[in-house]
Structure formats: C-alpha cells, structure tokens
Length: 228
Image 1: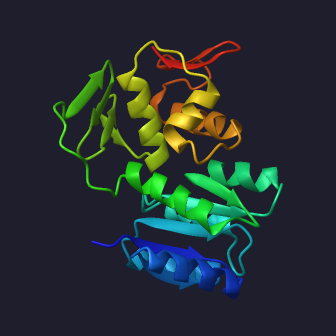
Image 2: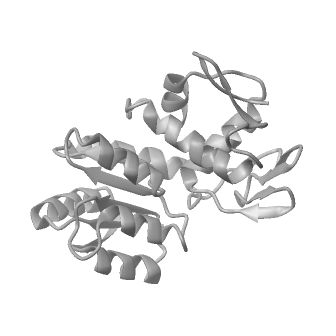
C-alpha cells in the first residue's frame, strides 16, 4: 500500500509543491494549513509520517507535535526557519523524529522521508530470527516494537525506539555522536550532533530509574554513548 503522509504548512505554495512531488512517488498526501486542522487530521487518520512546520496559525507546530505524541507514535519531521537552532531543539524535545530547514531541496526532504519510513514503527517489519531482546529490566519485541521496562510497557517515538534497539544490539560498544547520526538518521542527513544528545536524553528519561545517573545508556567522556 502507498504510504500516507500529512503535510502541514501555512504557505500554500510550499504545501502544493511537496504534495505534488510526493504524489509523483506514489504516496497519498493530505494537507493542512494550521495547527488545529493538523491535529484534527492526525487524530482521524493513521498516517505513516507527518511533515510539520514550526510556525503555524492557531497552534504552533511544536505544541501540535507534543499533542500528537499523546496519542500516536507517527514519525514527525519538523520544518524550521533557516539557522533557527532553538526551533530545531524544541521540536526534538517535543517528540519530533527529524527536522529540515527552509529553504530546502525537495530531493533532500524525500530522502529524509524515505529513510524514516524504512525505520518507522509503521513500516512492516522484516522476518527476524530473534523476536525479542531482553537485557536486565528492559525487554523489546522486535516485531511489534513494544518496549517493557521494569514490568511496565513504555511509549517511545520511532527514533527513540531505533536508538534503544541499536544500543541493546551492540552492548558495550561505544559510538560517537557522528556515528549514531549516520547509523540512525542516515548518510543523507548529516545534521547537528545535538540531535543525538536530545534523543539520548529523552530516552534516558523513559528507561532509566535515575536519568541523571544512568545505568543503561552511558556516556564515555569525550567519546560518545554506549549501552551497559
């Protein structure tokens, strides 16, 4: 089946261009022009990915993303103004999986979308020899992408899950931020390494008993991160 995408931006020409380009690739595209409309559509439909501008009428994009995260794990790509680092970080803090800055090349946006869909919780999983991965108090189901920590199921965004599965599949190996960025976000997204820091911090808040003193996702000083 064709992937279903929601494109949200108050600039109608941008929406029209993205919609046309994605439809040329066989995707099904819905559009919205303000935060309220976007939230309503996200509640009604099971999208594979949402492209969400930060600056929106009625409800701003970061708040829309935060509200979507209350009921859906759908991957979200935030669209920010060029060079506005605060918007990028805020988008990630509120649950976005990736971001792209205006003006952007449509080919870059499509590459980001395809990379996320390949790793998305809404993509059909491939057949795996191992269906479950359990380490101490953390257990993940590789087929359903469900995560249980200390006997309680927790909610992770698509990118947070990818990060946790990668760490748990590579116990003790230390990875730099650049390596994690390339591995999980793809070579087509050579973005800011702070993206990794934000996701690691959010993941720790969900799986660690004391995020300020992590027992699982640890930092190797001046090098990177590893799973202990």
